[in-house]
Amino acid sequence: MTLKLRSTGATDRGLIRSGNQDAFHAGTWLVAVADGMGGMAAGDLASSIAMQAVTPLDLATPEDALVAALRGGIELATGRIRRAVEEDPDRQGMGTTLTALLFARTGSCLALAHVGDSRAYLFREGVLKQITRDDTFVQMLVDQGMITPEQASSHPRRAVVTQALQGGEVSPAYATMVPWAGDRWLLCSDGLSNVVSADTLTEVLTDHPDREECARRLIDLALRAGGPDNITVVVADIVAED
Image (cartoon, rainbow, N blue to C red):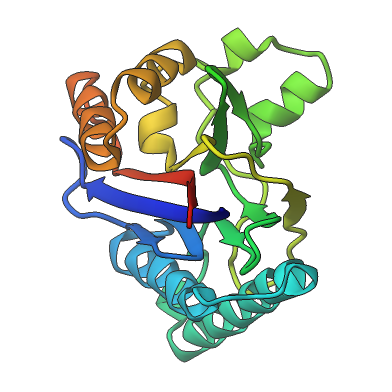
């Protein structure tokens, strides 16, 4: 038996925004979510550039090359975003989050790359754990002990990111993990995580084994909570196959 990655994704512009600046990829080896910022057209462009830069990584990769592959994808995205801003000064300030998970061809390892405030959660044996750390002003306040995580969830500046892919220097977080059969990964933009609680996420991931149904239900709950932002969800299961 070999472990495989099986994924699906869905996105919705929400109930307030006029367009959708999110982008996602749900593939055989790679899953990723990007949330653009910096004006309508520029946000669209930034997230699209990031996704186009990492999508070619969706292939069988040796486990010792996972992090290097993700790092190369982010460097490519950074360079392309920088050139896009140079071509049109009106794009100054555009950027995008990126959270990406790359699964090894052996099924024995996976790597995660993250910058911004989109999130990756691991749902393992009934327990949901946020794996990524938000690159946000309020997370910095939490880390410094100035506010609690509960206060952060309703803080007026919770949407202020401290770093994103904007064409300049950036310090993404990278991690490697050993997958287990039965693991379920949730990657999402803050249009979901800002309005749907972790307890509710756990409940939905538990009650909806079908990935597509699960993704649709999560988006529906974000819409019912007001849908103030674009909502993007990728659900990926680690399954044992012959």
